[in-house]
Length: 298
Length: 297
Image 1 (cartoon, chains in turn blue, red):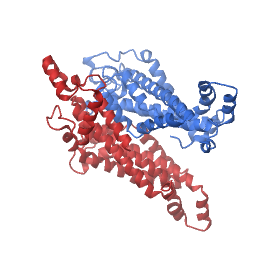
Image 2 (cartoon, chains in turn brown, cyan):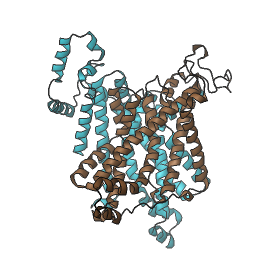
Image 3 (cartoon, one colour):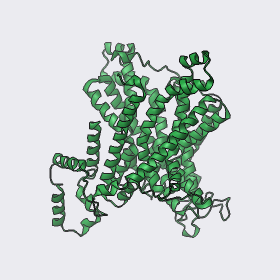
Image 4 (cartoon, chains in turn yellow, green):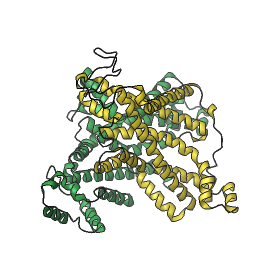
């Protein structure tokens, strides 16, 4: 066990904004703008558009975007097959994507970090059991697991969050465990133990803060992949129920009208891609800022 | 490995019990027209009144023989419904895999050897986009392009090799982008190693340095990831098959979910999971032959 102690040193404190330079800085700034825009749209959805995302208007169905022939100023991005305003549905869809992305990652992060702390600190049988579970989790394509579980449970927002959250904890667990193995034998932990600090206190006050940097980096990439997973599940009809506007669901419905209404599949897809791309770019930048040594993690 | 297979079987067994009593799930709307007594009989016939461990044992024994019960919709063995779709999925997976390795790895090598050039920047931008495009959207865009504006390629179904192009490209996009990025960073890292400097110093031509000395070592981490991707192609194929109406296991699975045909769902999930585990085992073995260093550990 002591052999592994030398391999990981405690992460150095301090943020290195200088680590992101040149074209990468421009890209990161652009990504930050996109993510901010999506967050603002999600939070302020009712303020941005006055149209009700669920408001049916059969007379105005499949209206093209404002700049195209036959478009109207009232619906800047056009309407869908039931006459619902596309822009307001996109804004409300951002809520679902962000909510699922952040909550599912929070669930898997908390579960994974907690198990990783325990496995790394105690070792022995506890470690073995937890790591075998994690191996199973990692050895299984999680989208398949999510499909299987949701097939039985049926669609629903909280179910999607729970399923995506509970199928993604293993990577946090392994990462935290590796960090703890290194930190466990360091002098400051030894010191805390000597002055009689309780195990939970050592784990939470002394080890956890030093093990967080790579976890945060992985979490930022996970938000992007969870957003894609949610959209894929909703697209398959297994994620968010059709009554709630979500990007994946919109793409699934728009697919039927592909020949008559290109805007129905173009805008939700663009929104999805730009959001995911930006989160990934921000994750890259975050990794360099928190600790340039983490390069290669992704 | 055996542990994982057992866990897979437990997971697919547990699927039916997520909602409590599987009787309702299996009978579906038929339960409404049946009398209480008929429902009880069905429950007893399926053994749902027995204790859990006994039921699990029964499930494992049957599943090991490929017996998942009868499809509720097709009225023939559920395993048969899945098994006949395997060739289509394997074909699509093989094409996507070949594309992702055949284009991804060379793209990464070219980018790395011309680091900082326009070629490098362009390739990496494309790779970044490829990693961020959700596969189902890429599929839809391709269908729109080739179905509506440029009717050159068939956009759904299976038949000639032309039918393979669009689903193959869609499924390959993500792993291709990932391979390119990974190969690039791996080659760049190796190029700084001392044995590369030695090779240069003794006058090996640049191409020889890259292909004989650097690439062999740079590809070790790439092979690991490529192996893992094989399994994830299975997961991705569920979505791609649905979009392009490709008659594979993934589409059969989604259709069965839509029809509430749970024996077929169980057979499909178990099939994909076992394949995934088998592929991973194969990759591990292959990895050991490629990299002699891990053989002795």
